[in-house]
Length: 446
Image 1 (cartoon, helix red, strand yellow):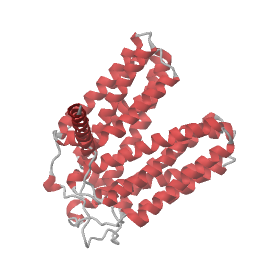
Image 2: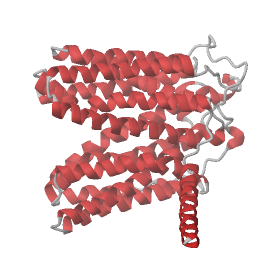
Image 3: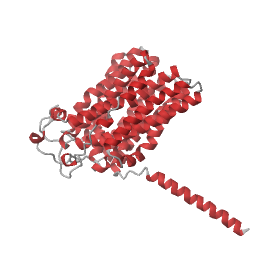
């Protein structure tokens, strides 16, 4: 009897040991090795994006149903947010090449706090457009400043992990915020409920600014070569043909990958497959969940690859995912179609994971320290361009030839045409220098 009990205890202990080892391996994949300030910064990013997720799915509904704006006007208000952000993004890059990133990030978040909280009290379209301009300007400034500050807090080897953590924080915040807001709106679809969401969104921007003020150092950038020897302003950036090639490739990747998936898949699936709104929601949840879970471990995989190979793999994954959408039209079973589209969501998510952690560090490698802000601002602007072009082109194709959306997107693959820009000798890392100053009185060329 004692032998049997002892044997059972031994087997249970062995299972517990195996389980703990498995968990340890899983958790090891999530270890970033990043310094504390970066962790704090991205925790603030998650809180900030949680607030954005609260209002993002319901902005047109709020302006149309609660405030009486036409849907066209509501759409223009939202377009004004991103339009303003796009306009100020290059200007923010010029500012970041002259001044330190921390105060600019705080200023941008406070502007967004004012703009988004103001949406809670708009009664007329002109008020909404003012709030959109203020909030969009703050977003454009803060987004670039967050990227630059993150890069100045880490070494060159940690850039991919830092970018991955920022992406996880943003996706986790957006997804959880949208989920919570869905329950709130479903239980209390009233003006006061929408006002509370916008006020809380504004509060998260203010909280993020406070986190940056209290918990993040104010680093400079290592001294660069004299401007007269290396060129200044956006003219110097425009002479970097490799960087321009990367920007063009990223626009295509965003347009044919994330943008088509996010904006065109839902109407296409509703019209041409047996899936309904519930199944479409599950597909998008799977995509976001997979990005949150896989983004950081993916950095370890990508680091073992040549970056040109990783870019080629990214474009191939997007092509496979887009073509696989057409398989969902060949079945009358909602379960089968949902399974196919869930597979598409995972493939696109893997491609997006690789895209961010490859292109971001490459851009940082290419950027001379005194032009880092401009490089990162144009890199960020390429996402805005891709997000804008994807729905515009995809919507036009969807109205004329639905299948052409996915065939055309699959054919636009540029990743394997990009040379490997590992020119580290010419690209010193933008790490903080103990005595560096970024607020020099020299004029800024934009």
